[in-house]
Length: 230
Image 1 (cartoon, one colour):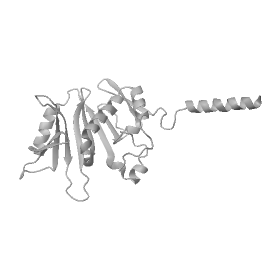
Image 2 (cartoon, rainbow, N blue to C red):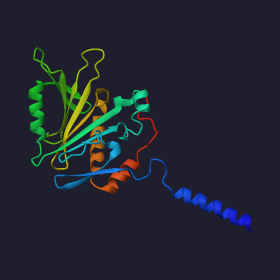
Image 3 (cartoon, helix red, strand yellow):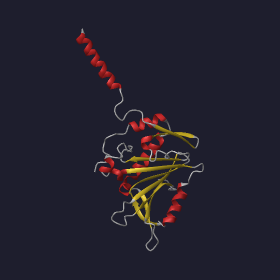
Image 4 (spheres, rainbow, N blue to C red):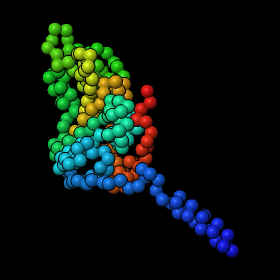
């Protein structure tokens, strides 16, 4: 009888253990804020600057490519293994008067003097400075809609490698959720992945629109998997 009860106890303990959330699957700490009359729910692990990364008009977060996981081990393996080059910094700024991406792209091209078409690269129209023009050493890559009008959907600017220790960076600009103007910044080595970065940036931001979505999204991310295999 005692043996039978002991067996039942072991089975019950095993069942209860299976019911517990595994490491990394517990509900994360959520920071909330209201922007443009809508409440947003951001897991603290994503916040770039926890003290001011979620304000009355900005969401500023940090994720890592390729799976947009947060920096669970930011002070250890990421630095040790040189994985910071896979970080994607996202700043979503809200305005009651949304930025016009077409006008914004045109003004940026004028400022950078990036008016000469190099060609199509990674599905984007690549523009640079004409020979002899003053250069800010930043080219542009523009995403056009596949329509007769060819409206600008997003654009990316990237710096150049001028000296050996330079680490060229890119910033992808786009609109999101009505009033947000989004900037996603990443290492130029990932420019070829711009479309995936854009898609995942939108998915991450959209997960912040409810507590349930935010928790589900971050709990789907690995806690120990390498950020990116070489």
